Each structure stands twice: as C-alpha cells, then as structure tokens.
Image (cartoon, rainbow, N blue to C red; front, side, top):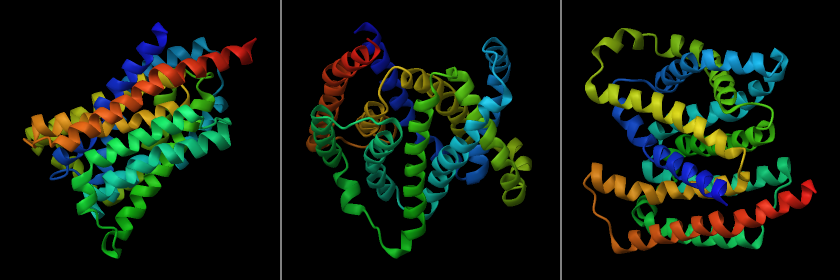
Length: 308
C-alpha cells in the first residue's frame, strides 16, 4: 500500500507539472516557433540523459535493435502528441483544446483494451463518470466558449490527432516498460523526435537560432520550464509510475490537470474561482481517490493472482 501511495503522489506531481504546459508554451510563443518549441527542450533533455543511458545500456546488455521499438512509438505516438498539440493550439481556441483533451482517458482505455487487454471495471467507470462531471463543472466557461466550426477545423483535427498519439504512446510504453529503465524510455523517445524534427526546424524555422540571444526573460522562463520540468523531470517520474500502475488508471488521473489548473489560474493569472469550479475540483479529487485506494487495491490483487 505504501508503494501505491508513493506512486499516486508521484503521478499527482506529474499532473501538476503538466498543468503548467500550456502556460509555458504561451510564454514562448511570441518569439519561438512551434517546431523549435518542441525540438530545443527535447534536444537539451536528450543531451542531459545521454551519459546515464549509456551506463544503463551497457549494464542491461541490450542491443541497438532492442531500442527500435521507440521509432514506432515516437513516430506514431510522441511526434503527433507533441507537435500536433503545439501546432493545433495556434489554429484553434484554448477552450476547444480543453474540451477535446477530455477524450484522452477514453481513447487510452480503448488502446489499453486492444494492446494490453485491460478492462474498464465498475470502479473505473464510476470514477470516470464522477471525474467527467467534475471536469464539466470546472470547464463551464470553456464549454460556453467552445467553437468547433470549420474556421477551427484544422486546429481541432490536429489537437485530436495529438490526443490519439498521446494515448497510443502511453499504452505502448506500458507494454515495453519492463524491458527498459525510465531514462532509456525518455532518451530513445526524444532521440527519435529530435531526428524527425531537426529537418523541419532547419527548413521552416531557420532564423530561430539567430533569435536565441534576443530571447526575453519570459521566453527563457518558458523554455527552461519545458526543458527541465515538462520534458525531463515529469517524464522520468511518469515512466517510473507507469511500471507500477495500470495504463487506464494513469490515463484517468489526467483529469487532475483540470483540478490543478484552477489554483494555478487563480495564483498566476488572477482568475477567480467560482463555487461550481470548486465543487468540480472536489469531484475530480474524489474520482482520483477512488482510483488510488479502491481500484489500485483490486488491480494489485489481480496481479498477485496472475503471478501465483
């Protein structure tokens, strides 16, 4: 039980970092293009991880072909998840993205069923229903402002494809999590993405390198946040948790991003919290506690039965 609590607290911290993601992108968008915003933090994170991965690679006696699975996971999962989401937000509305992201746990559950043979039991359905109600209450303003018209069709499509890619990547990484360390999974994924993104950066945004010395404090704050926290620390912790928790549990916990986004908006953007937003946040928290205590206990019991 102690390990389970540690895993969920770690996952909560990851969601806290991810809740700052759009804020970090907004800090950089005035001076940094969408490809460079994804490419530069990942390149730096890859360089940071290289010496540690070399050590793990030698210790694990792996062959280079063992890591080729991340070419598929990177191309079909991580690439659209990172690039399409960053690009899509420029062609759509933030409120559209907030609503479309609600589909992530559902799509993840579908991939988990098809790839990992996981099932949505009664506890998970109940938690999902409670979380949906909570998120709707938290996102009332976004729902009122949502516009899925043809004007934003391209942006909405890119955001949705990013969500599908994110779900596929998370489930795919869960499948290979027992064969690689957390650092290896992050490193190989980012290495694939850096290779894919480099020609795009050079072709579409070649002038970005000359702009780096002119970055403002706000831009550097966003880039540092994306590099150290979003692309480095949160991903290492996420993969560590992914080895311990069920993929569907991890996906449903992503609704905590909305709950955590409320105090962040109030503190950093001066937004006020409505009563219904507070109630919605409490419901999301309750749904997460159900997953933490009840469903995780049942999941561990099932794993023990399979191993005996």
